[in-house]
Amino acid sequence: MIKNIIFVLLAIVMIDTTCVNAQVVLSKNPQWIPTNCPLSPNALIVHNGYLFAGADNGASRSSDDGNTWHVVNNGLSSLPSVLSFCSFGDKLLGGAFYSGGLYLSTNNGDNWKPYGTSQRITSFVIHNNYIFGSTSTWSLVRSTDSGATWQFPDTTYGEMTFLHHSDDVSCSAVTANTNFVFAANDHGNIYRSSNNGDSWEHIFTSTDSLGGEVYAMTALDSLIIVEMYGSLIRSTDNGNTWSLIHNINFTARTFITFNDLIFTGGYYGVQYSSDGGENWNVLNTGLPDSASIDAFAINDGYLFAGAYVTGSISAGGLWRIPLSDFASAVKTNDVPKQTPTVSIVNDNIQFNNVDNSIDKIIFYNATGQVVKEIKNVASLPVKDFSSGFYEVVFSSKTTIMYTTKIILNK
Image (cartoon, rainbow, N blue to C red; front, top):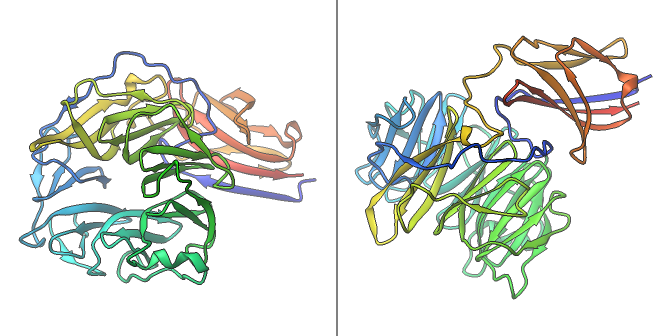
């Protein structure tokens, strides 16, 4: 008799899945290809199928993966330097620097208007229905209404004064996973919130050997990777314990994840890891020398990297690389027409909306081990499984297409 069954359905095409520990092997020599982007992007985002690039001279939009572009600055100020983007439903938010403040477009960039705050938001993170932003004054702000109004999260925890900018300590990076929001300051302290920023706990303090300021961080399930003054530290348990990653030679400024791949960009171009950050590989073929990566985006099976070239801003631009060059990646147009779902019916695990594009269904336990791998079927007996957490992966013959997380308490 099953007393309690909890499902968390992640109905997202091509979702990040660290529990899937497939060995990533390059299928060919990956090489970056320049696009026709007229900018050296500070920010990239995919919104409603369009690729947007933001830079010192405003925003541009592409509908064909960077081959052609349209300038979309209508409503932005005369100094429209775009630092960041956030896609939230039908809203596209853009953070501007010189003019200050936040701008909103509800028609895919055709028109913009000032919106929500005069804070210069340099990066965004979405957690549940909250939007968190890190500002150019190194404060952490939060919106509960899709960006219309902003507030400082509660700072009742003694050391969280860094959420409000001061001369001594300030917020320098923010990220989130399913359960937590993580924020860091320029003294190398990392904090975690399990209640959408209402309260925080201190989970890491930097050592003298690491330095202080956190430049970038990313969260992927329970894996957290933080760049701290030229070093990488990593937690595999939501920040409870940390370890130093030694075998690196770069300074990270931005991260992006795709399935079991983690990409990071910075002053030394691009590097990637397929083993949770333990080892890193250089991925710079095709990029100009001294390319400094400021932004990433993924669309239609491509990874995009926005860069400027040290000493020559005009030499920057936007490059792309096919994710099909990695064995674990395919283009996103190879997806099922319906979203697979899971339910319990008469002590059976029932699979719904599973069409012929799904080749197999794989169950992974909490440690990433394969518990059961089956061909496309309608159901399985619950008695075949022990109590615990499972990640259910729906896969075609070439790619992970959807994942669902399930906890069985029997």
